[in-house]
Length: 299
Ligand code: RIB
Image 1 (tube, rainbow, N blue to C red):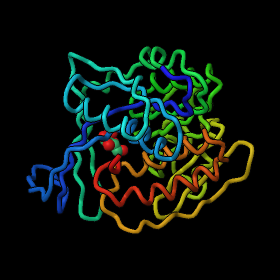
Image 2: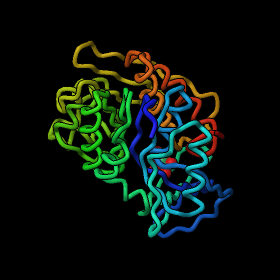
Image 3: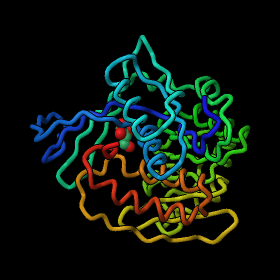
Image 4: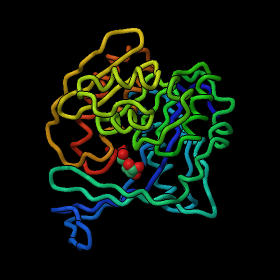
């Protein structure tokens, strides 16, 4: 394991099966897809790839099967320059699949199925991060469960690293972990979900979501992404910052755009940017990320 790592990313690696549809199927309905693409995904892998593309030295901690889909992930992340030595291979369970519908306007729906990603456990996080040096940021996604988020926050603290939590879908970690987030990153609906889950008023006006979350969670900082309306950034030691949106040149597929945003925030923080500058860079990368099919561009 290398000691030259800026960002440790802990999370899922899924094999994305992407159907291009005119309309998403409703209950009891069958629709015909225009296209079918099999590609690398998973919020963890997408964020690791984005962080590496943004210039950070990245270690990925995850789990895939001993199968062609697992090989694809390892090869793809290696192609981005990600250190894949933290990816465990499982002989008895296959790489997780994500079933994705993408409409012509780029909007998607995603179902993630069980598989090797469910072997991303607190023990795996501790084992695969042990002995890794120089880490500035540990980035986790709540998608892989509260216990893993908690373990990542602990590991970050032991390493003296900053802890960043991409909290979508919202799976509530411990209150200690929430307080360690710097930042917790959510979109508007996740922000309301998180507010509700910590017992705060989830009906506050959109402009106050980041401040409300800062108070309700005790996090050191909060980023709320609002799509075309930009983003809100609240920090315990500073005023609320409203960042404008970056307009996408073309919209092909929104899958993974949020992951690109989170990966770039983590990378830029690790490379010394302020949170505001990191979010600005992330917004540019996120706008570009809707321009390609699938969650990651060609390596
Ligand atoms: O955020 C997009 C990702 O969510 C997809 O790549 C899919 O695998 C799911 O994890």
